[in-house]
Amino acid sequence: MAEGLVALENRILSGNADEDCDCKNGMFNGLTRRRVLAAGFAAGGSVLAAGRAMAEAPPGAVEYPVQPDPTKEQGRTILDDGGYGSRSQFENELRWRYPTASLDSSWSMTPLAAGFGIITPSGLHFERHHGGIPAIDPQTHELILHGMVDQPMRFTMDDLKRLPSVSRLHFIECSGNGLTEWAQPTLKTVQGTHGLTSTSEWTGVRLSTVLEIAGIKDGAAWILAEGSDAAVMTRSVPIDKAMDDAILAYAQNGEALRPEQGYPLRLLLPGYEGNTHIKWLRRLKVSDKPFMTREETSKYTDLMPDGTARQFSLEMDAKSVITFPSGAMKLPRPGFYEVTGLAWSGRGAITKVEVSADGGATWQEAELNGPVLPKCHTRFRLPWVWKGEEAVLQSRAVDDTGYTQPTLAKLVEVRGLKSVYHLNAIQSWHIAPDGEVTNVHA
Image (tube, rainbow, N blue to C red; front, side, top):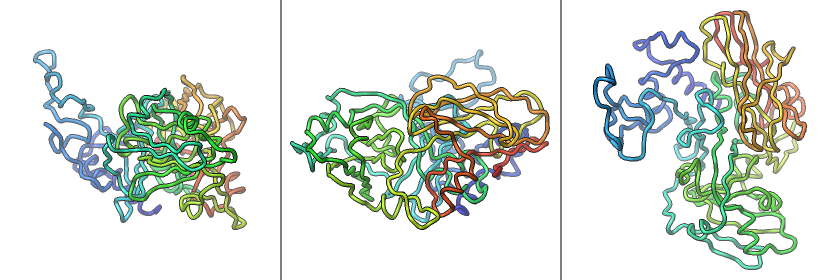
């Protein structure tokens, strides 16, 4: 798995000698269009033109002739792109797909270093699929609620949209985020090390609303959530979580869910590991015990050093990562820089982020940009003057439970190296005297 990701990352970063440019000497590795195409094909999907787009246009963009002086001629007409909108042809951030043998079961990673603020564009939200992306007609899709309820019920999408709705910003993180980094620094970029997390605004119906309509029987303690994909993804959810802040989401960032995010309906469990946020949700069964599905027995458990396994380790611990400067970047010269990154916790809100430039010997508190919301990405910033000397940048987050993000050594001391899930250790970026930024364990 690690070898495949390393090969993919190297292919994306390598570029082409024929396209050497000054941008490669700057802070960012500066994807050229040829490299964007290479990344798309490496990800297993065609990068196809749409509308008036030429083959050179990045995905999501339309290629237009660049005007020598836009003040001397009319620009293109409104709705020329078809009416939905497209990004600039000069913006080319992409998700990467892990190169599994099967294209149906894989994941893609968000380019965190390219982000601004805390919301991830819907088109760059990370994905994890076990049986491909189904195409579902919302007019025929139904949600079945049964088991330990007073009245089993069947909801159409219209039924759900008639109910009172909520909109909240929350992150989702795959519990396998960083799985290659336990034993040694493996991937070069923050997209590779941390790209399985994203934040969106989610809109839908509180799960507690439909449970109250159906009526919960005494003794009910768990709910089985089941998806409509080919894998029939299922996970057990504690009833307390379902009645707290769970959402039956049908919209993301102001529009309907995208198919890869569960259209037309997904379960959103703020702060829980991503595998529990069942997409293409079709069934909820209430029970007095967990269902012990494949995804919570043979998968998504944490093997401990003594051979036992932690099960239902659902909440994502506090975590942070510096996104600038980060791996595969290069600082062009000594001087002023603003260190920035993201912090998040599945147990509440971030209350503090500290940054170190000397590998954890000393720390300085960073500024938290608002809004600072529970179970949501939080942007932090810290002014920093780099003197052209060797440095090791780190960040550590504290949430409102008082939990502090641990060092990798401390985490491994407790967890060992037999599990790949729930890595939330402090990330280290080494700055060399020539400005090169690399992933290290420090």
